[in-house]
Image (cartoon, rainbow over all chains, first blue to last red):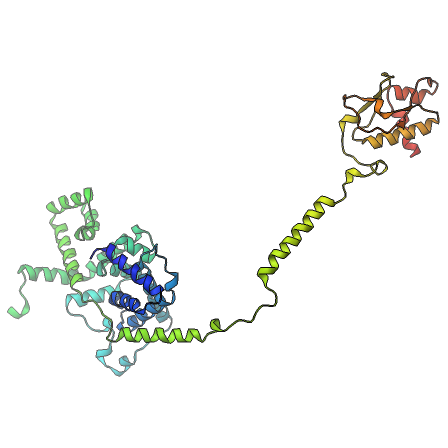
Length: 200
Length: 230
């Protein structure tokens, strides 16, 4: 489905929501809830916090449905709301350090993502993404994880296009530096130049 | 292209974001540089890993929880002050403003159209008016072209006539009434007023040298006399 068609669907649904159609609103929630969850979980490194923010995002979308300007892209609008709420949450957490009850009880199943010891490369990548500075992390997630266009990322983050490209490039280089040993190992395994331990 | 420059473009190259000349330059360099080729492999592996990373999803029942919350907020909104009827205002501003503007406009028109004009004051009150009018700088009776009254610049006609009155009183000599209409102004304009005033006329009064001479040449002595009197 092309971007243009998705945009038209978003506009049609938003018009219906403005007229009070809750079924159309439910459809918008289904279209964007997982995308927002993906971005916000990587940004906040906590699935529970991310889900709260996703819920708050949709509440804000509903509350301000009448003020949506159809000259703008709906996906840009909703991502902007979600990321702003995520940033506010990060600032709030820096100010007051939060401890989860599950941490005190020693229940490893409730631990947030970055507290688990990563072993596989994708997990290492997740962990490395969490360690990126916030501005590089957000740009990387939107561009390389969500696969949004550079122009859209620039509108969401309200920065120039060149700045977005620079941040994404910088994030990739930082991740490459962190993952280099594991990536080289994986390359060697795939080429057969390095045998896995089980064969020794 | 140097390796440092190529490696800074490698992530964009692997993501298919380079085009044209830059793409061909990087490709040509990768063909000859094994170090940069290894770097390219690392970036491509990173790209594959990134695509294989699991995406996060919301928990089950998310939609129902969200719709419940929205319904709760809508209910709370209908109980807010915004929904209570407001008391009717004692003064309806929207009706008062046009009436006030109309009143101000009418007052402004009346003031500008019916205010007393200082120019229409009678002659006796015009003394002291310093409106300059060069048309009255010289006045010369038609039947005595040698007689020239040098009048002060800036004096109105009424001031000049008042001055001539004073001069004639000082002389205490009978003067001929010459209709003012006969006065010829140096600038060839006709005087509009038709009233006649006694004016000093010097024919036959040569014995009154200071006045006559002054009046025939300059009016300085007569002026001084007039000013002393007044």
